[in-house]
Structure formats: structure tokens, C-alpha cells
Amino acid sequence: MRTEDGRQSRLRISGVWKAYGRRQVLRGADLDVPAGALVGVVGSNGAGKSTLLRIAVGQLTPERGTVVRTGSLGYCPQLSVLNDTFTVLQHLRLFQVAYRLPALERARELMELLGFADCLHRRAGELSGGTRQKLNLLLALMHDPQLLVLDEPYQGFDWDTHQRFWALADRLRGEGRSIVVVSHLLHDLHHFDAVRHLREGRLVREEHIR
Ligand SMILES: Nc1ncnc2c1ncn2[C@@H]1O[C@H](COP(=O)(O)OP(=O)(O)OP(=O)(O)O)[C@@H](O)[C@H]1O
Image (cartoon, rainbow, N blue to C red; front, side, top):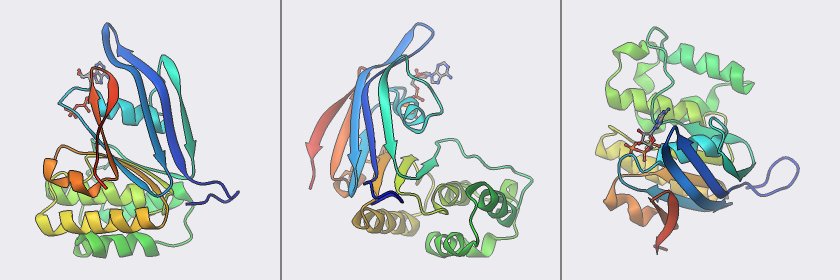
């Protein structure tokens, strides 16, 4: 998808190294997510997937390597960014200001699509785990970003919502956005254009699915 200055969205991570103390988590990881691609990142617990995504969005700085992002960014972190005392609507208003959005139209569309439009006035602390995750995902998508970085975005979703998430991802990919998703679910891998396996700190081409 093209940015305001006509460039295609893209995420390109090259030769990234990251350690926490003595624990070397990433050892020269490379990842390329061009416009119109839906790329999956898989790997065992503790392999470094969330670390990679946090570096991708600029939350963490690698010791070595480069990250180039083109296009507006939507990041869905593994741990939700919610404030339990705020209602869903208050979250939307807060992020509306942060993203400088004139209206909440898209947020409302996403609430309908994810099936929690009836929760607008409920406090985040009262929501079920799956519904909290719906709000967490919505907050990453409500400004219609061109580059989507999603860390296990459908944790706790019921099957129907899970399917609707993939239909949405498919549509956004079709519009030419760049999408990277951390996934643990083997039965979801066929949705990806490419799957990268994080193993011993590097991303290995797993298979070409489509
Ligand atoms: N802030 C931190 N300080 C120290 N160690 C950390 C920190 N964050 C992550 N780690 C360690 O780095 C390693 C990679 O963690 P990370 O969360 O990136 O893995 P992951 O692949 O996303 O795991 P999971 O599948 O369980 O979500 C783990 O051993 C973790 O304990």
C-alpha cells in the first residue's frame, strides 16, 4: 500500500542481534515484509518472537542490525495496553486523540466485525479475556495503518471471531498492506504467504505456502 509520498509500505529487518544480559536471543535475524504480503513468524516459547516484533516497531533497540519501516504503523502487543478502569469508549477516545482521528467510524466498524459492539460502555477490567484481546487488536487497527505488526492477535478469540480476523487480514493484504503476525497455531499457517521460523536467533524460511 502506498504512503502519502507514494512509497510502498514495507518492513525490512536486517542482521538484528539482541541480548538480555548474557542471554543472546537474536543472532542476525532477517525479515522482509513487502506491500501486499502476510508473513507469519513461528517458534517455540522464548525463541524471541515478541523481542523481534518489539524491535520491529522501535520499542527495543538492537545491539546490531537495522530496521526500516515504511508506512503508518499498527502494533498489537502480546500484553494488552488496556487500562482496567476505562470503558471501551474511553479507550477509543484516548487513541482517537493519539492517532489524531477526526472520527471513530473505523473503530465502530471493527467493533461490529469483531463482535463486541455491545461492550462500548463496559470497563476494560470487566471484559472477558477474549473481548479484552479484541479491544487490544482494535486499538492497533483503528487508524487504518499500512504496516501491521501483530503479536498473537487472536489469543482467546472464539472460532467465529477467529475466522473473521483472518477474513480481515486477507482483505487488508489484498489492499496492499504489509502484515506480520506471530502465530502458535499450526492450523493457521495456510493463511500466510510465507512463514518464518525463529530458531536459535535467526529466521529460517519454513515453507512457501501460497
Ligand atoms: N525484558 C526482558 N528482560 C530479560 N529477559 C527477557 C526480557 N524479555 C524477554 N526476555 C527473555 O528473552 C527470551 C525471548 O523472549 P520473547 O518474549 O521474545 O520470546 P517469545 O518467542 O515471544 O516467547 P512466547 O512464545 O512465550 O511468547 C526469553 O528467554 C525471555 O525470558
